[in-house]
Length: 435
Image (cartoon, rainbow, N blue to C red; front, top):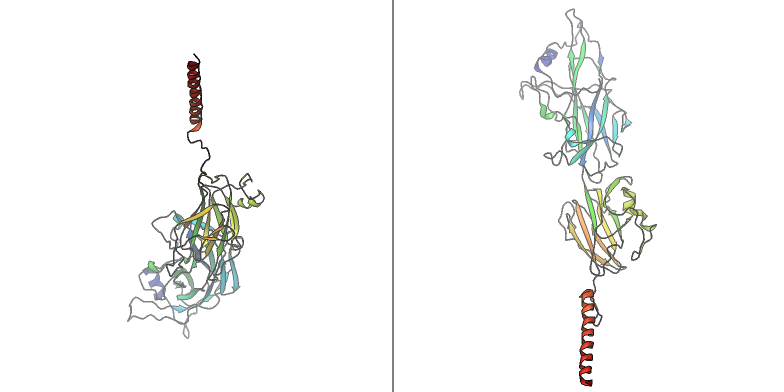
């Protein structure tokens, strides 16, 4: 049996089990020992649809509970006793699961981990940020398996083990607020009319809470299919706009985007950030652009790693183009730098417009015009999806005394006709005087 997780047992089966239990004493028959099977539980990582699965690991331990929980009829007459699980339980290796030792295993998420749509959650123990909208989130899943084939049961009863998720600190990750789950193994008496005493494992239950089961009741609120963590990430979009009567709409401007980690949060250099937007992947140099095609070849990407972005990565954008960088771990910041050359820059932000972190509001973010003709926008803690539009303006007045073509060719023609008319009048007047 690869997966036998049940939320509770019916009153009839449980009553039969408890009623037929035979205490071990002198002269009494001894049960034939039996062994358990395998039980699985899941590790989930919930995130936005636009996020990539981070390279993060979570470790788990399993052990028998510390002491027996007696049936306390003064608290609840329906309470049942819970026994310490016998020794021998261990983790089994699996896809995405490595063994630290027999009773400790690590589940490792990566870009290869299976990912499912929110709408496919079925009865899994998942918590979404926006449960009313089943289209905006997804979850990655790893299954861990507990092996009880080396556990020996010699008496009917309910046997309990504690499964613990060890604390994990990783950029953007929030761990399950309930760090423990419990595995109950239901061992029933199966004696026959001939006096032969047998046992069998009726089922397994993975749940939260330390209470003893109650006779005749199924507590579905405690049922659990596993542990649920969350990965929070945001998007950063930067746009290029050119204005002014001297502004070139064809000119490419250089943008450098870098991710920062001021709090030193753990994350992997191999974590992936998706690149989307509207931009030229293979721009060509032309009059007015300061960069060669070879330099601008860095535009041809669909994703970058943290190793790429922590050192700064260059893009080249024209008027009306933009880049969006998705899956930026909550807690990271950014520095966006543009080389505006001879243009006058201005930045407009929407989304996270203040410098504060998760605990404070901070101050309004403003563009910094630095030496070397660069415009810098930065935030040490990106808290939500954010858009930055950098507008470069290049406008000029026409100097006094320069002939303009405001009236166009019609104006020039009018000037010419006026000259001809004046000449005709002059000739007529001259002719009259001669006569």
